[in-house]
Length: 252
Image (cartoon, rainbow, N blue to C red; front, side, top):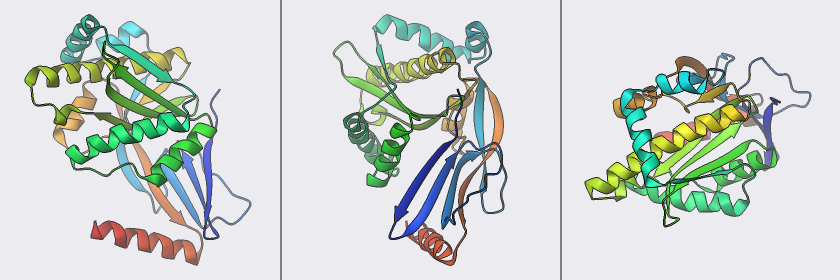
């Protein structure tokens, strides 16, 4: 059954609430310094609009398969010959989260992107405690992890929070091709998994302006939807904290 995901934080006497997938405006009884929103369907003045890709899980498995680009269908079919093993961690432990963090940060170094730090680990741990975190991975016959995908779930929407593979760390074309097939296979099996758990929407986790990443996600079918993410400050101290955050981000 769908539920509202709300994470409550307090640091240095500053209160912060984080909401996921809101469909209507919420009101808080106590004064919250900062409110964070991720993939909200409610437009608000201080939030940024983003595009994401919704895959309709009420469709039949055959319909979902036919909506895939033919390249995806071909690679998913080939992946079945490699005897990949899919693991779905519905109730991950903190050890599972840290194992993912280590794998992801190796990926981030080669991809020249942000690492998964202690704040992100804490967020995943809080999501875990709310039964809102699912970690999936695909392994080869030697039990080596090839790809990870981490999802936030409210029982209705499953949204990809992180994805990682060591594609860029591989030098041989054959190894890169194998990881490409494994990644697509994992996404497809995740789609079917959340469908089997009565979710109605599979959110690919946002569409970027990077043409390669955008094209990759679009090849799984679905509909482009506008969502809103960001932060709102309700107090002077909240405004100051957000100002510091923006200043830090500009410095890189």
